[in-house]
Image (cartoon, rainbow, N blue to C red; front, top):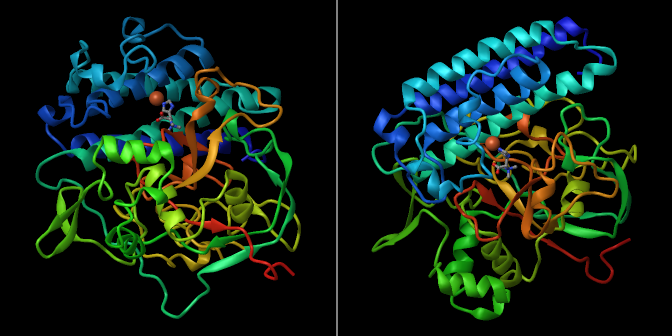
Length: 440
Ligand code: AVJ
Ligand code: FE
């Protein structure tokens, strides 16, 4: 990206903005106005809030800050400020209606593209102007994933359709790999669109550990469930057990027990639990309980990133498990191309040097690490993007899901959420310490 001429960089940015908008439009055109305004869950905004919020952020960051242009709708800044109104309160606000929101987004985008034509895109200003466009692209794609999660919570006939993801190649493969101990470079100072919390690059010493080569499947999770995993307190942390009891959690979100076994509902379709597919819609606490039941643990964030980026041959950290190339269709299940995770073991072209698969795409993976800034962290462009969330109440998730766009994930990307959250497309894989004699 940094080597592109300013004209090519402009074209690249315009393409990324256009792809994000096509997704926002598809997700909001799929339902009628009543569904856009309705709150499908207290955990989520009405879709029409996300839509206008996307436009409002684009107006503030690109049209006003980068372009120095006149504000279009300064009167709605507060309405669409996520910090001023919790999600549960958003339906009661005097929000723009669907038609008004769509017109506003078109108007803002027209201005933003004009700013892009004129903004300095090379030299010292590159990081400032181009970064703002990169950040806005990622912001829209992040809300597109949030809107996809709202679709999953919506009642009614299915409105989203997509082809099935690829199957896993046949043949037996190791279930775990040993990741050798030693230092590696975590985070980045070079990735052009990396957000503040991914920076700066720094060395971390990670002792040898063993990691699952795929995310934990529904089949394996069902063994935990059927084996009394939700009934036995000893598998759960104190906070996890309090949550399990307080909310009467007995299975992943969207699973239901019927006389003939377990089923789930996915984007309005009732279907049998796909045993070979990574489990999704589990909280951190459920992931932690499963890992305890299995005699394992969740990976730390550093372990996850080392498995995803460290190349033992060159000793350097890659951008992605497969190398430095941007994600292609064969590498990972990203971008809402498929509306479910692919079978565990799929995407051989996307595996890491040590043979770990599906680190990028399919399901976000819970790590055991609290969300904090790296050594040398500097908030950019403002504290509200990530710094205000640092602390023990959020856990880091890594790798993106089938609902995440390639523009919004990479080997260094960090997501975070409360450990009780289940409406996000989150699963996990397990790690463990090596047994005596396992480390050469
Ligand atoms: C990084 C997914 C936790 O959705 O709350 C969107 C991204 N920040 N708008 C979120 C975000 C501001 C953020 N996560
Ligand atoms: Fe936002």
